[in-house]
Length: 628
Image (cartoon, rainbow, N blue to C red; front, side, top):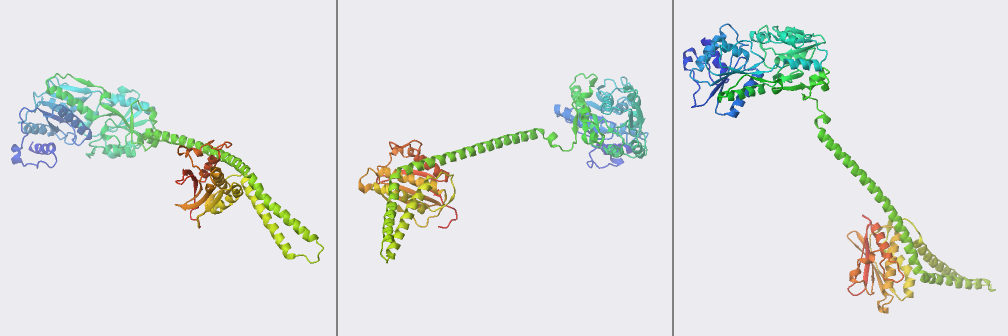
């Protein structure tokens, strides 16, 4: 008796918290202090306290009680009968519990399992005779406790075995045999003693292969050689026929490693160890239901027998790895099933994110497509605009050349008349009867003819260059040289109007990159406008200054006149289409000039001079890295 008491004291106390007492000190074992009016509940379980399912039940009971009333003191005791079953063990435990709780008043006993109810019924409630009791059991008790334990109430949890058998038939339609695996201890045998009969009542065609009470090696051999129509139901094994004890999940792991057929279980405590899963008992929920009934009993409420449906304390859980191993289609699983341990799947695990990403990608694709379409449309519009610009520029140049026609004709007439006169003199000399020809004079005449011809050819070349219709062609351009050539075109007309044109060029200008003809047209337009502006001015103010300069990587060309200037409110309007101050003008010259400059990535502007007149200028980027 003393030895049993020592063992139980070590079992019920936290590991390492109380040293094992000697026989002489046993009566002085410290007892829990009574704290005023606090109520005390004792949870009494019959199984091994290391079992995960039992730990879940006890935790559920305790948390449920203390969530409602934190002042309630909860004690826990475990009979541990599967591991200690010699003849006098149970009575020794009863004596020890009587001694341990002799000074502790217990208001309610919460009993977990039929074996605990049996234990108290055999002793007529001792060592807590007369204390209210509440039990939780899976199904109906097999003993009559109305006389031995009067006033006891209980919670009957519906049996999950019928639901499990129906599930087996659903997901494995060819199942005709169930291999039952359980331990060899008297308690384990007693618990499973009627399972064969229960299974046959559920399905009379179902054959039961009893693998209980064997050594673990024999169990493993049997489960490794099962027929195709069999499944394994692990209950599990705590002690085998050789007396070997097995901790939580160990039986499941061993069987799953060698099993030739799918493995099932009834509780959540071993889920993930190699079994498929199924209708799994949530032991913590089991405990919470008991705890809620315990609170009612402590408060004095009547607690008749409560029946808890399967759905209220179970979960439909399945292991994806085992479903794949045994080729079970997930579509056969009951509605509401939860499948865990799936292999990572982008579509399955992150479907909302994938759909969102695809939507964003599709939106981006549409946006990019739209931008490409817009870019293509704009490019086409640019090309059309460029073609229009070329056409308008050509027409503008023709119009400008029309304005210069008289002066250009005069410019051509002079060298042609000179050529004609020199040719006449030369002919006269060649027809003379004198034997000695004046070779020096003839040489001078031929040289004059050649110079006049080149002069006429240069005028024609400039005219032809401006009258050509062509696309913009980018090439290096010397702005000073461009200015000289353009001034040469208008100088005859300027001289006929008594207008002076001066060129103030900056030496060492960097070249620009652009189309020579189009840029020459811009300058020509500015010169013609300037000449118009000063044509009606007094003689001393009929002058234009063409100035070239360079600053911050850009080359600027400006035309300054001494005319009346531009109205302050019209300075920005002169570049708009159809704006003109000429009676016969169309107002497109400066607009076209501005378009040409912008096509060269340049800018153009106008401003009034402080001393009268106006300056119109444009600037174009210089060629990067070019040498002046």
